[in-house]
Image 1: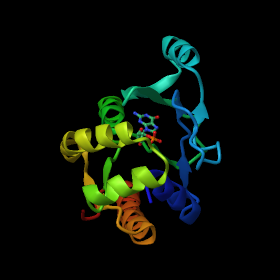
Image 2: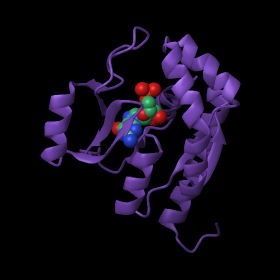
Image 3: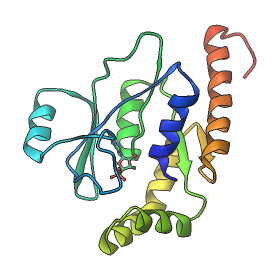
Length: 176
Ligand code: 5GP
């Protein structure tokens, strides 16, 4: 399962987390319910960029993706499930943001997952070609690296790191 599934699972397990809903110009996949993104056309997206509606946005394999400025729930920690160019922008504006790099268990498993969700062969080839560079950039930005081998295991790992970070936020003198 991909990063999106993991992010959904995290908000199910922890009600102090709030998952941001991104905008994208890509088409909705047949396998999607339709609430994963706000699906818009390029004109609408570009007008939103001009009006300063995004915290960050990036072009990824020919489509635009962006995080609308969060109207975040009070006291919640916000999850952005985004790619590396966006993470870089968020960190520039918010040095306290915590970046988790979510790794596929292997490039072979990534390939299987992209095919299984119906991506066409050209897109699968492009994603596999750019993956090593994205992972390298991600490693530079990330404070934590989590292998998405199993959604339950990976979410437990992330939640235990978050608990530790919250403890430290409440009591900055506590040990790391
Ligand atoms: P997909 O098309 O597979 O849903 O997403 C492609 C990539 O775009 C994934 O790596 C996903 O994390 C990333 N992505 C989704 N939403 C956003 C966003 O709002 N901003 C950025 N920068 N990347 C996003």
